[in-house]
Image 1: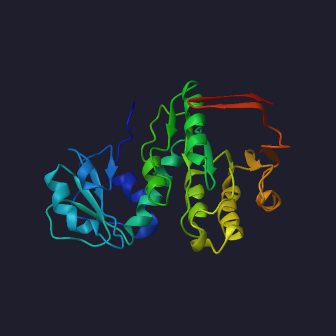
Image 2 (image 1 turned 90 degrees about the horizontal axis):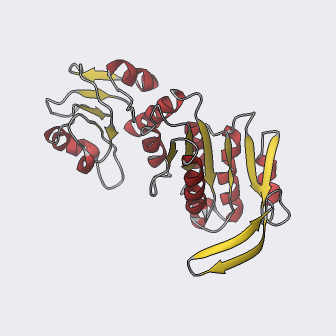
Amino acid sequence: MTAYIWQSANLTEAVKDLNPTFHSDFTQTSTRIITDTRKIEQGDIFLAIQGDNFDGHDYVKTAKDKGAVLAIVSRAVESDLPQLVVTDTKLALGKLGAYRRDQHPNLKVVAITGSSGKTTAKEMLGSILNRIAPTLITRGNLNNDLGVPMMLLELRTEHQYAVMELGASHQGEIDYTSNLVQPHVAGIINIGTAHLGEFGGREGICWAKSEIYAHIAKSGTSIVPAADDFADTIRQAVQTEQVLSFGENGDVFATKIELHPQSSMFTLN
């Protein structure tokens, strides 16, 4: 598969809102941007993320020793590794992911959120679409405000579809990540109780996850659960003309369901 080439010009274009400045010249090119020094290979770009209990800036030297050709940092560190300094590396990661998404105007994106079942739905959809054409599928738990742009950075020219899983552990996260992926088809599977405290109850979870509908292409399709306790509230957030419901009394539903230890069978209506 053909990898995207990062160089000084498109790096600065992608993060132009974050006051990018090169600390020493960067004349090389790279095909990968990595946030974990344990995964760095020769020729990679290291992006230093600062969290509550860690600071990627402490590992710039390690990144260079493992073959990194550039570090993206929010403050220059003492190293002979070329550095691109920006105001916020976490925001830079998002902007880099969004930039890669924008390079694929013909990419068809499906985005899924919900309290449970989204990983299963993502894997099934990805498996189906991958039989039609090369498909980018969210890997593992890379479904948060760091993981989603990291997945977008893996887009290749061959990809025709992307199935993105969007998780949320705090307010505004779905709004942020769904804006990055710009889906054509997206929706909520259900409203449960995961991260209940962070959202102040199931209603708060519903409003947070419903932010996904604001970022679906106007010509796209909103997917809504027909039988969820919050089905009416979810529908109020829909902004597309095309809406498809699923589940009991929905547009798509299953009957004659048989559950077995290693499989299930049903009739899809």
